[in-house]
Length: 415
Image (tube, rainbow, N blue to C red; front, side, top):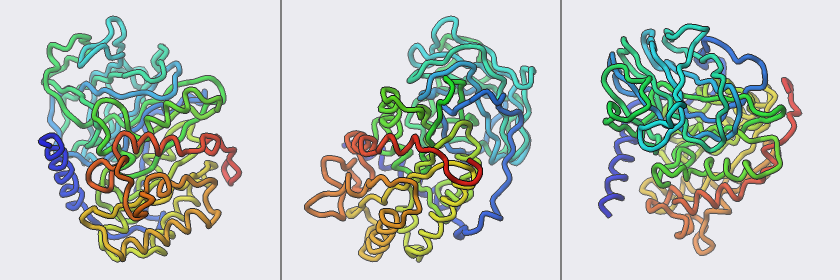
C-alpha cells in the first residue's frame, strides 16, 4: 500500500507539472515548431531501436554526468544516438559521450564502453531547439539489450530536455566519469532520461520500425519499474520472434499527453514531426491517444478529436508511412470520468473502428473493458486507478495487435 501511494504521489506531481504548461488546442500543422538535427543518417538503412519523447525538464547544471540505461528492440550494427536540446533556451555542449552494455546497476560489461564522436569530433554543441546525431559506432548492438549511454556537459544551463517518466533507473554524477566502466562514481540515481531521445542501428536489409505515439498508458504508468513491461515492450518481444520486417519499436508516449493541446509535453500534433516522423526506418505509426483530451473537461468534442486524428493520419500518410489507430480505453472510476466524457469516447471509438481512414485498427477498448461494465477496465487488468493497465493489461494490449498490420506497405504520397 505504501508503494502504491508513493507511485500515486509521483503521478500527481507529473500531472501538476503538466497542468503548468496547459495551452490552447492546436489544429493547424502550419504552426508546428521547426526541429533540426545536426548530422544525418548515413542512408544505409538505419532503423530506430529505442526512442523516448522529449519534453522540458527542470534547470540543468554544468559539469554533470548522466549514465542513461535504455532497452533496445531491433538488433543491428553501427549504433547511433541522438542528443536533443529541443527545449533548451541556449546551446549545450557535450564534451564526452560513451556507449556500452550494462552488466549490473551502473556497471558496464568490461570492454564494452566506447567513445562516440560527432562529425569526427569528440565533442558537440547542440543549438537550442535542435538535436545532434552521433557518428556510427563500429560495433554490433544485440536486440533486447540494456544499452548505457554516458554523457557529460561542461556548460549546461537553463531548461534541460529529457523524458520525465522513464520507469528505469539511470545514474548521475558530478564531473566527467563517462569513460569509466565501473559504478564507483555513479552513485546518484534518477528515474528520468536526460538529453538522449533516440538510438538507431543498421539492421539487416528491409528491417523497419513502428513508433507508438501515446500518453501515460503507452509511457507505461502502473507497469513494473525496471522490467520493461510497457505494452510497446511486450510488442517488441512479439516482433522479435515474428517473421516480419518490422523489428524496431520506439515508445513515444508522454504522461498526460493530449492530441490537441499542450499539457503533458507538447500536443501530439506539435511533436509528431520531432518524435515520430524524424526517426529513421519508420514504417508504421501506432496512434493511441485521446483519453486526456476528453477527460479534462476542456470542452473538446468528438469532432474536435476526430479532426486531430485526421490531421495526424494525413501527415503520416504524406510521409509515406502507415497508421494504425487504437480505440480509447475505458476509464470509469478515474476521478475525472463523467457521462459526458464517456459519450465523447463512444463517438470517437465509432469513428476509429468504422471510418476506414486508418490503415488498420486495434481495439484496445474491447480488450481492456469489463464485460459486466464496459465503461470500466476489467479488474484483472486494472493497475489500481481505473485508467492505467497493470502488467497483465499491458501484455494483453500487445497481444491484441495484429503484427501484420505493422508490416504494411506504404500506399500514400511520399511512400
